[in-house]
Amino acid sequence: MASSSVSIRNVYVMMAYAFRAIRSEGHASMAAEPFEHLHDLFSEILVRGVGSQVKRGIHRDYLHLSDELPTVRGRIDIAGTVATRSAVKGRLVCEFDEYRSDTPHNQALKSIIVFLIRHGDVDQPRRDALRRLLPYLDEVSLVAPRSIRWEALTYHRANANYRLLLGVCELVVRGLLPTNDPGSTKLASWISDEAMNRLYERFLLEYYAFHHPELSPSAPSVAWDYDDERALGAEQLPTMYTDVTLRNGQHTLIIDAKFYSQSMQMGRWNKATVHSSHLYQMLSYVKNSDVDRDGSVSGLVLYARTDAVQQPDLDITVQGNRIGAQTLDLNRPWEHLATQLEHVLTWLEK
Image (cartoon, one colour):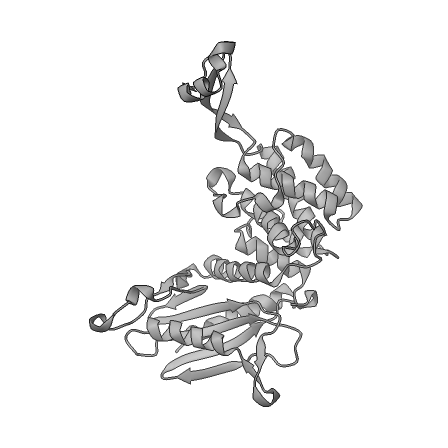
């Protein structure tokens, strides 16, 4: 998708929702500030966020360590002591816990700050501001950005403020750092479609969770509505995962978020149609969810709008269930975008 299809300001708002920082201090001023380059936006989030974290205290955790020591600390590793012949030198290999700032969360944070300083297209004042953060992370190890295990980073009350900061760091690595050339360190100017698709999905779910908890927003899997008496090999059926599911009384809306450079496909005789696989997928979700066959389940494929002339605008009823495909214009002012998101809820009305 061309960068002109998503405004930089809306990228920030999407991140604020996706990483549950919409209520954070300074959110309004960040959302209103103009940014000419995506690297500047990410840098500013880190400058403000890490600076605020420094005032609270950099997050620390108990790390399990092993070291050769002259005195006993923690538990003696007998096997390790024998293997290294430490006893001959009057030392012991000990395993112990130490409360340190050199956590995986801080390692990821420091490594991406350094990466932006060295390789990002960041203006000089922000580059200097990033450098001023490094002394506070002096005890934290640098790691290779591609070695960071994002899925292993967990969050709780003590480090909840890291969610947005590390979300930014993950987008830098997954969305801006080219993957086809492992040796490349030049950051792209815009987030890849794959990374934007994941952000788009999380944004939609968290937007409705924040503004409409009464609709029980969730992303559950859909069970296959098959006949138990004739279910040979049912365990081989693939799992159907939804992006967003909303419920209002007896009515259910399943939303499938799609961020594609081409939101429509060209068929025979150069006819533009909605992607067939996306509609088949949605029809499967809806039909298997509507176990009572009463038409109470609807499905909407919600594309991020592109610059193409023709855009999906489908709203039909298939065998009693409402199915559609529409677009969300991520390049419009946030107020307009929010209006579009609220209009989607009319699909829950019978």
